[in-house]
Length: 110
Image (tube, rainbow, N blue to C red; front, side):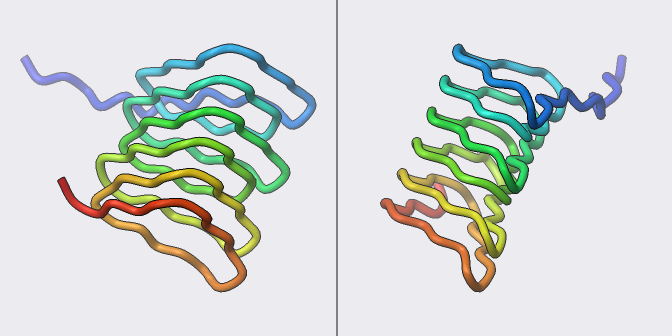
């Protein structure tokens, strides 16, 4: 039996503050403030005005906002032009845009 890939997306809106850990089988977009760890099986998008204080583990991470914490991603981390990341990153690939800020250790590959 084939399992259908989960393309659902959970959204934490811009006026939401959450303290605690988040886990999801689908995709997630965060536009608010999170203080806690995030574990997502698929893609995580950190919106432009968002702040995450905690570690993130995901398949793909697309950062437009700010993260203070360590990141473990199975595939690709995208750090967009206005994004700020303070913490260590482990992934297969890191793509950064001009104007982005990354402070931490980087480990590419297994």
